[in-house]
Image 1 (cartoon, rainbow, N blue to C red):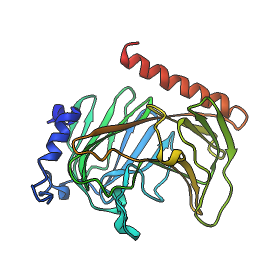
Image 2: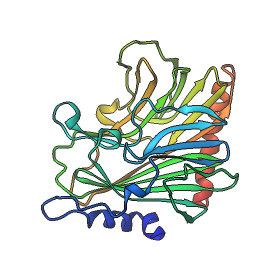
Image 3: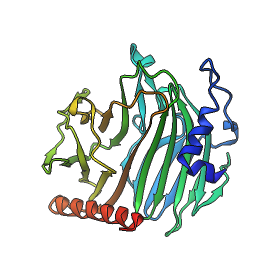
Length: 305
């Protein structure tokens, strides 16, 4: 089962089998009642909380016990299929994402998830991987979250399995930060760098978007740390302004909005790696740049370059 889940084509074929000719989704292949409502996965200095209700997605992430991502909204991919109000959204806490399988592994070995167990992992040097297969409207979806002492890598795979003509856009990544994370650094695909401080706001306030982003770094003033996020590539975004912040009363949220393929059988994927370090406001940019280099070097090593 593990090999099938880790193989993107096999996993997607598994999801395809859940569709009948009429587009009706069959019953899930696993029993959610036997899984915990919430559980934490730990590796090195990182901890990640997953909850059942929003389709087994990330609710929070910490580094050395300090909050990096917080549970004041939804994270991981969300699809917009048009319409009004909540009916236009598919995925995570918005609903209508049908989870068909979930598996946790520790250094490649399957770890049973139990209702009474709320914490997994915790040793240095281990790699914790959570693999979820689901159906999101006309797309089959596979989410792979890999947590280690090196940080968190998010990998999201999709295949068009139904009529996607009405799809408007996809939030490939959504990241929710506490209000103390207000100093940011965006490295753009064209070589430019945008640095600034997010404004205060009592309402939802969207800031200007950017076409393609090579990395995002946030400084957490009170916690004295930096979190750097590096996508696998500078993904082309919707209307060339799909990387943007929304400043909200309770948090600061970053979105990557793309227009996904719609042709039947088309496959596509998105990847992003997070790494954290301690940093002051004065050396924020230097530390953030160093984290970007570390992530790039790690990717090169995995490719054998």
